[in-house]
Length: 115
Length: 113
Image: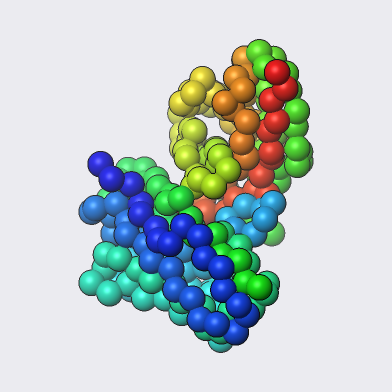
């Protein structure tokens, strides 16, 4: 079974530029998560989708961050414009809420460096 | 306030020695409990989890963890550490179908030859 796929793995951009990250969850997983992981910290949830619906986006900085999950499968997280403080690892995870109990499976992450 | 605390930022042990990583949580009810490991440049891999039942949980790679309700703790242990265990370890808790997962700040493990 393929795991959670993320691309790109690494991205370097200048501040004020836009950037997008892509995530393909495990087949059949209806729930998708985007996490932010700063250096030396644990992951923090940005947004959670159940199918196409964003059911928890309370921690997503909506002035510059946006996300979508069209057709309830792949998801894209965008930052526009990027700031120096956005340098971090962006992790995607997926789970199947019908599993009892459910588990989150993580992708390898995208390491963003803003210069 | 809900929180997860990993008191040790960095631990160094010799290869073959035993290991214990601490995790304490503050939640209104007993949450689901997890330990993840993250190697450099990699995503998080689940080592073990506790939902109910036996409070001593066995995981992958020879790890185990013990849930102690009275101490609100879920410490990770391994009797004999291997050099390949060097990584970052995260304790996490979740309520309500694992939708609200909170992570500790992590403990970085260094293994000396």
